[in-house]
Image (cartoon, rainbow over all chains, first blue to last red; front, side):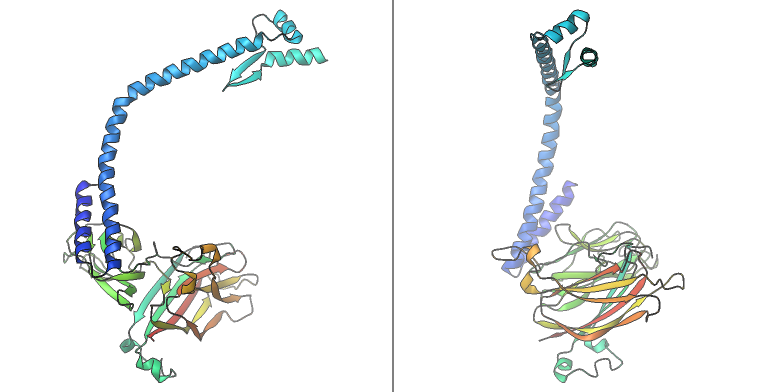
Amino acid sequence: MDKAYINRKIRICKELVETSTSEDQKKIYQEYLDYWSTKEHMEVDLKNAERIVQELEPLLQKKLREAKEEIEEIELEAIDNFDTIDNETELEFKAENPNKRAFYSRNGEMHITKAYKEFLNKETQ
Amino acid sequence: MAAGDNECRMRLYEYRDIGGGILGDLPEHIKAASPQLLDIYIVATPADVAGFLEIDPPTSVLASAGEVVETISSSADDGTDATDHLQGISAIGINGSNKMVTVQMLAATAAWTETLHTEIWKNMFHCFGSKWGTGDRDPAGAVDIRTVGDVVLVELAAGDNEGNGAAFVVPHGHACMLYGGRLTRSTTTGVWANDEGVAIRIVYIDAIDALNPGGAGAPAPADRAINWLEFIVAGQYAQQYVDIPRGFMFKEDTQIIHQDSSVVDAGEPYTLHLQYLIWKK
């Protein structure tokens, strides 16, 4: 919003507060004055916020990358731990398919792989 | 008029303007109070579904202890120049002295930028274009009446001299009487559908139910008592209009809203003429 417009509104509201003929009216105009004064501050705050965001963006991107890498590491670790569980069926699957995983992690949850599911189906038939 | 569209013309007549012996049968004490006549004429088509909706509501409801308002146009072709289009807009509402009034507000600049006016308003109900230059006989842009906080109350669309707003409030210290009218079902096909019709409601909310809920002890909206008068025109062989009876009274500070609905599920065009007599107690 145009700063000159807000200033004009503030000036009008101040005049109305000064010339109001009753307490009720004064209160109404004071509320409008507060509203436009807040708008004025918001304009300044908004500009400051834009500048801060621009300055912080490279730093935020770096932090985000680091966080992603950390999550990936944790997930891989979880898969490794999960795969070492002493489960006979899983060991049989591993023996038959040394290059395939029995489970995978997505969004922090463990899921069974398609290959292992097929292996289990074959086992139960 | 498409289903769901509605348009209200509201005019306020002062006692000196009420002619034709219309008030002939009124008691002398009412005539002595110089009553005003609020005339509401609605042309509308309810939505294609049964369910009551407010007819032509104002953009925002003003319920204030009293404040001035601004006007503004979105077009530089409205304003004070002789060759401009709209130059003045009139509003109907309740002023700072609890009187229902029509006040004309004129543009102050060639391109109608925000213009502060001097009248104090407690409520504002409706607006209409009332002064033009040689450019055109309707507004070039959207013309708004709004609070100093930029909340639009009522407005004219570009090219439309009749603004919105079909609801009103009975001024404090006044009495209001429904002074008759007529609900007329129209047809665009020349055939009256047997299984359809139009229903309207005059909804009135008493002041004790709080126009502005809030404050200690004020009823919540869900607890407010909403009353209404309902009129229906329906069927193929019945008379296709209903005369609205006169005599129903509304107390001071009562909020009156008009609603419509199709009787079944197909919106049919109709006209609704209502008159309310208002006088100081």
